[in-house]
Image (tube, chains in turn blue, purple):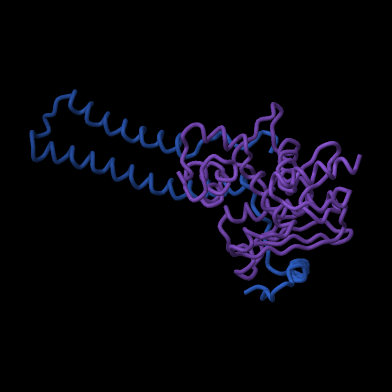
Length: 117
Length: 214
């Protein structure tokens, strides 16, 4: 833990803290908003990327499995072309839609900070 | 001329319900009213003006617009202040130390939330600005937590608190957003301050009555 604070010794404790920092007391440069935001975005990009890949792989597997089940247990492999197109097309649209929403909405490219900052 | 200013200051002080004790020169006043040129400013008015000047000089874009939230760490660095996260006692929120022939250093409690650290950093910048105006080459402040810190009667602390609020939550920007029926929570999120700080600011600006929040 850091320095204990006796009453009415603020300036002395502050100087003691500064002295400690100069002598190597663990400290890090405070992050400004832009850097903090970038670090957070990078951190969450990794998390979202893996979650998204998992979700999309799962979605494709489910779409294919259901399609196969539909063929094997349902109406057989004699499936009309429009149904195949609609089914697989819907799966692709869902995949692209999820990716678009996540990348465009969750990771906006423009910074909201002042241009002079 | 000075006597006239003093008389006006006394009247103004009575109107505002504060005591006056004018030392005659800016930076050497023992009381709360400062004579600046032809105008009379309380310490709190002065803090607001200083924060506004800093924002205009170091943060506003070419057209004068302020990007919200205000990045106080960046502003501190533009002022030549080193800002560090440091392990310190839980009873301390931060400190600023300026020693002779050395750059000033703001130390923030690394275990605090980012919003708390932002307010502390703005508060310490307030100390820096005030002492720079006085031309002090060597000083140190330690800021402790607790209700007494917020209600402090020390002139420097009152100035620094007002400065921090004005720097993080500029009056015009708060009022502009407040008109859009924003809630305290929404405003606090937008300005990256705590709900308490925003509520206090809204009360101080007369936008909500004391003891009542949105």
